[in-house]
Length: 327
Ligand code: PBG
Image 1 (cartoon, rainbow, N blue to C red):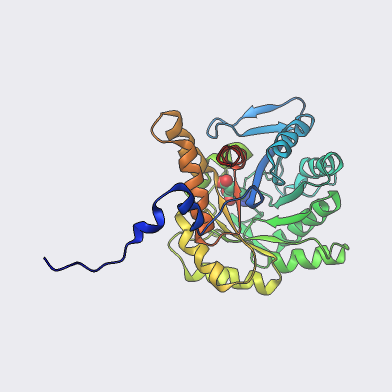
Image 2 (cartoon, rainbow, N blue to C red):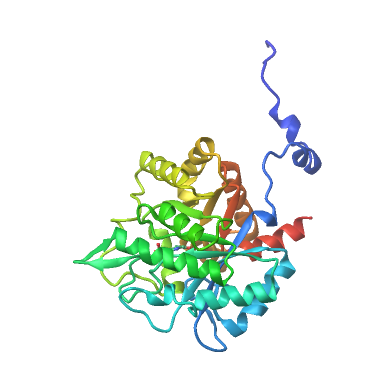
C-alpha cells in the first residue's frame, strides 16, 4: 500500500505538560470582574432564586462578601443597587446617599485596593423599570442623558474607579465624559456597554436587580440579536466618543462579535457573561447533568480565545477556586 502523507497534529497533545506548553489562551483571576447586588436595608443576604450562589446583600453584609473575594484573589467588582423607593425619574440612582454611592464609599474605605466599577443605569431605580425617562410611552434619549451624567458624577464622587454606562442611550459616552471632566474626574475611565443586545439571557438578572420593565420591552434602545454591522457602528461611536473599554453583552451567543470588535478596535474588550448564561449552567449542574467546573473553565476560556481581555461573570468566585485547584 502506498504510504499516506498527512500532518501529525497529535504530536503536540501527547501529555499534560506538552499540552500546557502549546496552550494558546490562558485564564487568570485578574481577568475577572464580579457583579454584586447591593440592597437597601439591614442584615439582608437574599439568595436570588434563579441565580443560586448569587445574593442581594445589604451594606452591613458587604464587608464579608468583599473579604471573601479578596481571599479568593478577585480584585474587581461591578456594583448594582436596589433602592427601597423607586420613582418615575430614578432619583435614587443619582442621590448622593443612594445605595450604590454608599456601597462605593464603604468598599473604598475598607478595601482601597479593590477596583470598583459602577453600573450607570436607571432601570433599577425607576418605577417603570426602563433605563431612561418616559415620555408618551417611549424612553426619551436626551433628557435621560442628563440623569445618567448626574448618576456617573455622583458615583465618581463616592469613589467609583470606573464608570460603566449600560443604558444604551445614544451619546452616553460623550455626555458622561464631559460631565466627569467638568466635575474634575478626568482620570476616571468609562467602560461602555457599547454592544448590548436585547437579550432573553438577562431574565434572571431582572429578578436579582428587581428591574423588569413594567410595560413594553427594551427593544428601542438595546440591539437586535440578528445584527452584526450595527454592533460595529455602536463600537465605533463609543470609541470616537472616548470610551476606554468596550463591553460586548451577552457573551456566549455573541463570541463572533467579541472577535470582530477585538480585531477592529484598540481598546480592552470586555465580555459580559450574563445572568441567563450563569443560571443555565447552575441548573444543569444541580441536576447532575454536566460537570460544572469543566464547563465553567471551558466557557470562560472560550471568551478569552474569542478576544475578550476581561470577563464580567457571576462565576468569578467559582472560577477563582477552580483555578487554585488547577495550580
Ligand atoms: C441594566 C443592566 C442589565 C444587565 C446589566 N445591566 C439588564 C437589562 O438590560 O435588562 C444584565 C446583566 C445580566 O443579565 O447579567 N440596564
